[in-house]
Length: 538
Image 1 (tube, one colour):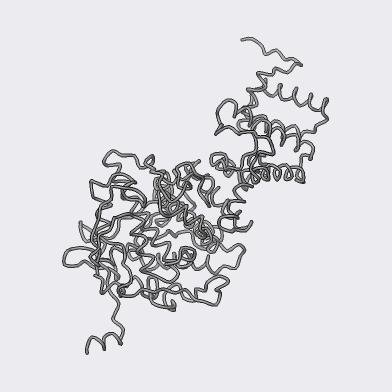
Image 2: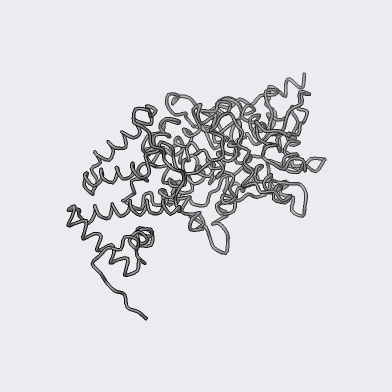
């Protein structure tokens, strides 16, 4: 075995190879690498007078550049322009970055930081486009590492600016969102189950298993509703519930997350963060960690027939509360709206003849039709739709988003306004069923040999529906990432919607559902108000 020969000369090629692992596998760097780094540090001290922190900063940047040059992290080249030919906003972004570094008071010193920034500009350029891959890697260390690379700081700055511009979030709300994003990314990376998971027994008290709201036991449903009320009425800043509601407002979000391919994936991420918010915070507060979202399968209410939809027990005191006017009973009483409507209570407007729940025939087509085997055939803006005749005798195309839209109008009031809809908790139960329906469609695709994770059509109202566009609100994901299997394979799953068939017909075990003569699960109804009974007696 030959001995290692130590020299005072820096081996440039070897030092470059060592830098590839700097900050990644630093604890396992071989002795010869350590020697090269020592020699490099000595030269920098003697020639430039840099201290240890400044040298480590320079190495970190050199490591990033070396990985880029080797193609490990390269996600596209920057394009350098003559300064005066740049767009005004591009030039402003560049100058803002220079000012940010110059005026930053962190250690190492400003001079070294400026040198490093110039290296970034010269080698990689300053881009105004969020790099979702790099941002997701940066988020893995968010809140853990006090030192972030310059490229991470720039990605966070771009992400923060977009969140301010598109949905008007404040700095505290943005940091809250990043914390939750980091938590989810770490769980995916480490293949860990969420807080509350019980190895061998599944999730602690079924945490992560989403059920139909009316199929839950009374105490589990009450725990969930208590958790939501806790978040809504908590006076901490920022308020978690209102932060989530804000993410769904504004024209840019509406065009990005509705009317096209991104509707399904964006709302899946939105629901996941909503679930994470209350389960994560409740766990931290040591109040309750055994809660999971539930879904409202309104096709069960549809089977009542159009004259009885408004009397479903889904909108009764034990479940969602009143469906007409101000909500003054049920779990969401005294649910005041945020400013500028702080004196107004939560309202709903379910009336006969106004709109419909999800059509059970459409559900059957989406889940079972052999003609619907691609996302193009079930998303708005696509093609190859199946059609049904609605209760007014009109033919319409069947899409998941179209059925979803009907329910928003059916519930009415806040739910019929895209910006305000999340202020009604029913919004999340409804969207949870939309996600359930989509998951059933994805399983059908797999049974037929198709891959739902790559079947992203890319159609929509504008370019923000493109597959590789960075998601508004969740900038560390691309639109196509919302079609991944990882969410339902690693983070949550669904219990099958109540049925009247099989050895254990779950529909029969709830006070809010029953089996009809056709052996279909249908909602039970509330007693008719006295004024309507008097009208019928006439």
